[in-house]
Length: 364
Ligand SMILES: Nc1ncnc2c1ncn2[C@@H]1O[C@H](COP(=O)(O)OP(=O)(O)OP(=O)(O)O)[C@@H](O)[C@H]1O
Image 1: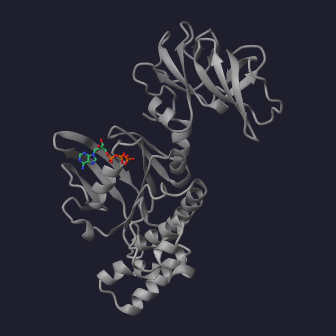
Image 2: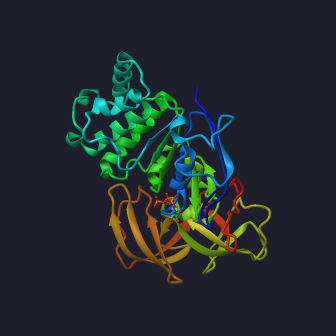
Image 3: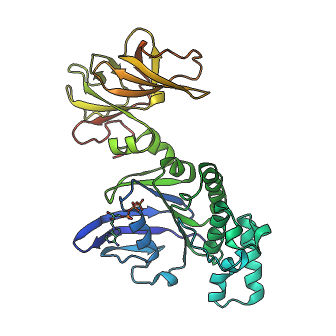
């Protein structure tokens, strides 16, 4: 049976510095849960509090209904995988994976059975007699993963496990990790600063900034309906444009230059004349040669096969990025004046002051 993790108003202090202040979140049994945020936001600190490497200065962490605050790390029944693999260089693959079981004094034949089983799951059973120095980075990370899960922990924790691998291997390994996690159905907390990795691998993501959770949601909702401008710009690429709510009609957003778009999903709380920030992803623009829209000039373009990526300057001098619809074939030359429409059902609108969403269905 998989376990749940409850983090309840936890506090982490280093001296007088409060790094995490009364942070709460719930992780469901068997869930692949990711802590995502920029460097220094407190992801690793929180992960280390869960496993017990860091003390907890307030609040509590529960596994199911057991409070683990005062349980030492080696008694918490959790496995951890680190960025730098941390496998023993003088032991073969098999010996590395068997190590935790030997420490637990399991009988020899059971150790062998469990090690064989896990090596098959992480798909390195053919390498079991190799020494780590003769393994690729991806293979070493599979050993580290095998070593973490062979002890059948209740919780698997991973701290940037893929950041030492090259781009191609990262994609391969994140798929492998996801499949293995599904197969053994273990509650997993994963730390990364790579938003694409988080979107690809997670059931749910907590986006953190300065020790504070900004949003907890599915990858799709985090991408499509960010709750504030921090999440909107941290996840994927967003153009943030100034606008205001029309003075007469509070369902119309008016951009600088007078381009007006009617929005069906603004909250009822928006007020006529209120200043807004509109987040438009590059693919949420439509490129036109004339008509209603934001006037822009193409500065440069990059042909990417399926799409063309344009770097443009808007009439107010602001730079923006635009991805042209894949069905438009001709690349528009630099210097061309264009008009950008926005796909109203997809864009997000935030209050200028609070930076929080004013879209209905965008959670707050
Ligand atoms: N042992 C420590 N003593 C004092 N401050 C610390 C200690 N460990 C971390 N910090 C501080 O706590 C904050 C959060 O650090 P943490 O390592 O959790 O961030 P992170 O989001 O995991 O970043 P990264 O992706 O760079 O690892 C940072 O400001 C860091 O300087």
